[in-house]
Image (cartoon, rainbow, N blue to C red; front, side, top):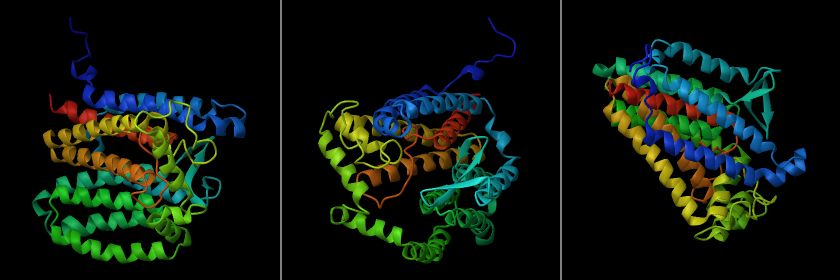
Length: 371
């Protein structure tokens, strides 16, 4: 029996994409509680403080995922410049007294009615939508320097300029990497991309050298044990967590490094807590879940019926994959320290809501392939 207004597509969900995401969100809730309970008890007098907030974030994230699953992705095309201008406005607002606020020496958040939001997360999404729209419209001239490369890099420069003064060098690196991946997938000439790197690298090196804390991070990355009492402290204790976890882990809630040794165990270094409490098997299971999500994202991009959907899919998948690789790389001492959330697992509302929205969009693009 058919119900008026209800179609098979309206209730169709990509199980191969949805289940890994929901499993990761569930693991995240458990591990956030395990990683933060001692700190929450000391700081707020309730060991479930972060657990309750993360559970609410997860519920809101599921609602956002469902909502974006049913919003036709093609509606973003005519709204491209509205989304772009809104993202720029949010980035500017972090410098407005009373709206933007700082934490840890960085002005990366805006606060409204008691809720905080990190505009750089939305800026990444806005850049992906803009690139997908622009490249799909310019495909016949994408190899022309003044059409396929320079305008896109100019928009990227506006975003990176506003993010770098927060400062948030890590978000800038991800934004640049996602842009380059999308331009490559869109057919921009390799020579143009390489020449762009020649232009971008000098200022990037300059910014790293002009900030003492960034240089300390580079030095601690090269030899964290030598700097174990200062800039290498986080990485050393993260590596100790992985080492003590072994194959099977110490058990959920039984980790030692989260007890005021490993800084930010529920956010930037939650992967280290997973390594200690769930062991190598837990780490491999987490990697497997992320791999399935990446595979589905790439598959959706390859099978998309139009270029705009294909480019949006590859951009969202690349952004998610880069966040995973960088966070895990930092936690395992393979990359210089950088504060970055692990998608679906780390504590925090902005990252979770934005990533859940992206998964909903991917599902909508995938569903359009079966119509």
